[in-house]
Length: 149
Image (cartoon, rainbow, N blue to C red; front, side):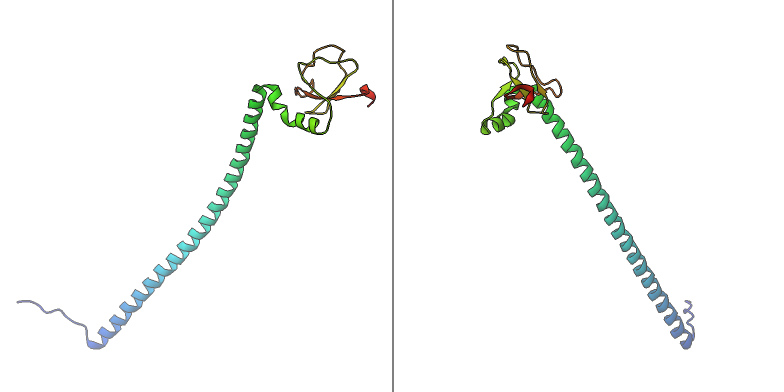
């Protein structure tokens, strides 16, 4: 013989159904609040992460620019000085100013001004021009009138 399940009285059934439904709605609202809280947290985390990523990339860009400049300097130092002096030489030439490179011979009473740092020197006549003593650059503008100019 099978036992029939014992059912609560009809009034209690409606009350229990109402409580179960309230618990279900309450659970659904809890999940919704939890999801909203997690979404707010995720949004804040992503915003912070994006900000930190931007800072990192800006720093990385600065480091890359520094490395690029250093690499350029190394390559220019290793290159033929006549090749690296072209931009400054072109300024002298376009301005109609006389210029000289390291390795050339100095004439009588010629004063030289370094195109790299502006250092002025009056070398002994008929000697070979050496790179600038201050910055090591080998391109000079020839000045007339000696040190008085």
